[in-house]
Length: 318
Image (cartoon, rainbow, N blue to C red; front, side):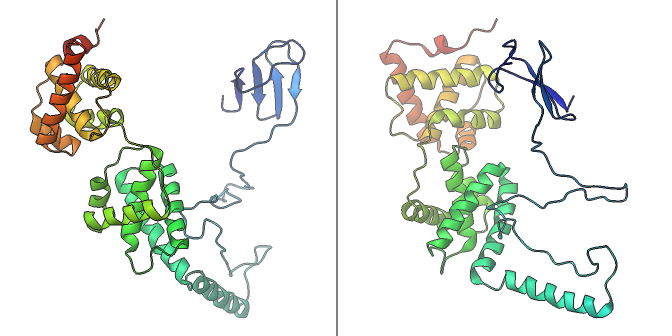
């Protein structure tokens, strides 16, 4: 089943003979065959999977190549490795040749971290691995954060400043650019540096690298806050509807998105009968109770202007 799959009209051209849209890919024979008339459309398929090379059961590592090109590796995955115990035919080298190869290995390892730039990246990428693992961030964010850090290093922004703070600020900037809801407090809490230092470093990156992250809306914070509160999907959908109705009245502009999401969830909990106090909701949203109450009054007034009751926004369950 892994070798053969049927492509849809969007991913494959139609059969030139009968016009059929179902094209079968046979990875074993390297052919693309029309499922309707049996015409062989293509007889050569390029396999884009891993390139394996193995000749017997004793060979454990079947990979012929190393890791791909990656910004999150200090040398971008293009490192050189010298193994000096066997020759090309697999025979063991004599003692004198092994001694010379060990000297070459030592010099090669020293040359990789001899430059200040390489040492800086080696420390930073290790910290980047730790932070992205603790924050459970996807690989795309990790690569984007590594690229932002490399740009800051090329502009000589890190000289005299903390590497850990720049790594944390780069991760937060990557999350902002890619639209992933991670507050600065959560990133700085996982970092080794203080929150104020990470915030100051992010402002420096934003100014010097001219980052243009999209403006965060309250919608994307609702699922994470609802997950912390352990409310039902009905309450979450009601909160989204409340925010959309208020957005139509232009009542969301210029206000803290987390406070708006928390206030919408508080209002939705009242309508669906799920009891959650303001203190618990504000803590889950990372805001204060005063902000939650102010945003709650704003949303309530916006709904009253259009004569809409919050109970009318609760989805009807069949």
